[in-house]
Length: 245
Image (cartoon, rainbow, N blue to C red; front, side, top):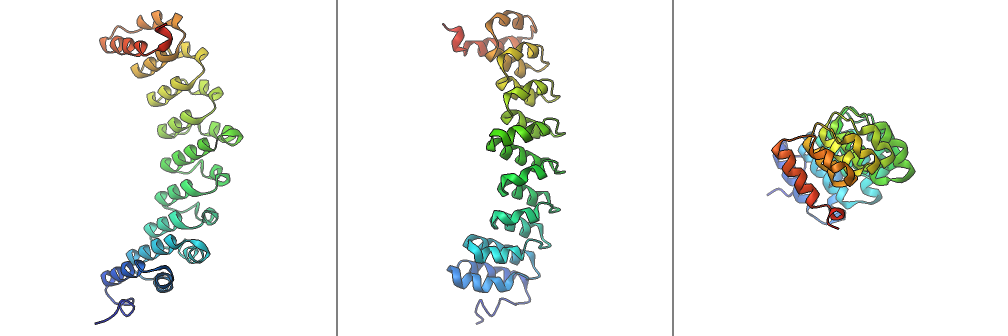
């Protein structure tokens, strides 16, 4: 009966795939030594297993081999490489043609490279970029998030509204998407809330009511007599601690 090592070059890709999985389950040195010989297998599922196992090993050896797979013709393999390679090598993959690969890159690449991905053609990538820039905070976020306030994707703008400095939020009060305006209402300085009282969305007006100066609340009741709005408004106000005093 042939051993796994003898089957590494079997003509059946399913056999090679199974061999790659079995070798991958072995201890480090043995697995890496033999899997590295399968990096150029003609079947992408085999190369995927190779990238995953070599990546798990980590260290300089893994990084050396994964670099050789950065331009693999399979996007699944390249995505696995992007998940596991040393982040210092990710700038070389920023322009990958597959958006799932670029999204993986956006999650791990050094923050100093994120501004180069702010205009990525895929909204999922830009959303991840906005999230990470916002988490970085400070001067870095204040410099770059305002450039994404008018992104064509509402999901990206919502992420920006969650994380941008509050001084920029007045410029987002009239966003066309209600979820974005809801987030603005939750964070904007209270002196700007009266300008949002007449928002066309129930939920946004309720968010305004949670924080607005009490002197405007009577006016907010008179804005809309729809039972759902009135009921929600009463519930929101019942939760305000400042009104219970």
